[in-house]
Length: 452
Image 1 (cartoon, rainbow, N blue to C red):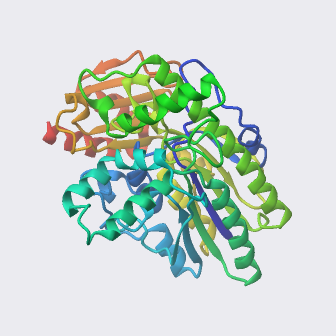
Image 2 (cartoon, rainbow, N blue to C red):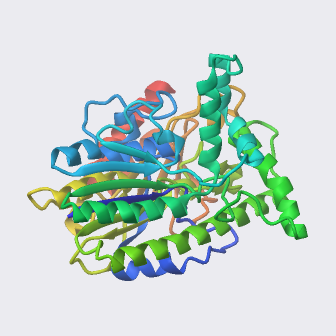
């Protein structure tokens, strides 16, 4: 069968603090035709390591593609490499800069890498302003002497960076339909991975603009507040001592995010309708998931960094397998096991995957690891440390800043009521709950003890 692997970047599954949710009729109904995993967890809180885990089946401590390395140099094959060996045409489609080829190894195995950017004509000052605020871009300026006349390629880098922020998921999904149709007509087996980016900050509220219409007071207020707030947050400033974000700004960002989610929900509805009409879903394994969540002030955090709280690692997951009945699965699963799921359904022999109760019983825990951002030495101490989380049933362990905290993510969804453990107590209490996966808990406990 063909494989369509869709990631909606930054789509959180955890509800907001006020209980409000986005209006997403398509995603709400998708569970009626798929396996919906209500408790899926990412292995990290940002794009590179979480994707590396889905592409390799490994934890960040194993694949080591995270803030400390910014590359995947491991020997384990990637999902695209294996699929290519099996005779699939492999393609990566996105505008996310993580997949632009500048990060070593993350695109291994993809025969084609297609960047879809906005077709909007003209210069967008907001996009350029937000792009220039990114620490990655400023490091690029310092390292290359950006404004030297010979550095035209660097100016092209900024232009591409800025254009990548402009909404374009409608173009990406249209491209996918045509590409899948042409591959099917040519008789080629296809493995397509696509990263949808409109839900990611700056949370584009419209298909053709990063701004609201200026004709209302609310629109003017948002257009003045959001760019400056997002530029500050994009510098990881929320990790610094004494930096606060006003409630007004928080609400503006949250509303922009909801608008972006609702718009992408509509785009996905149109996309799947087209696939259905063209008969392209009949023999296609579809995975629709997020790589991580997004913060809007929970635990004092924004965007997606420095956190293994539910807000950042609890993600939505739908799997559509031709001929398999729809179901809801409430067991805890890890998105790293999507590697096994896709290979298990496209190989010669049927393998146990997260769709099978026996597999989930053997792997009852989801683990997450966060390697801290090293380029912000002034950050608060709790953000200059690596973190580990284990989730299983109604238990969650969070190890950070030499502390071990236990939570009940079912009853205490906002994680406001921690139980404190010693390192040995945490290992003993959770080792029994995670079964065969206890080796991962013991390994991280040993690593963090050495680091401490």
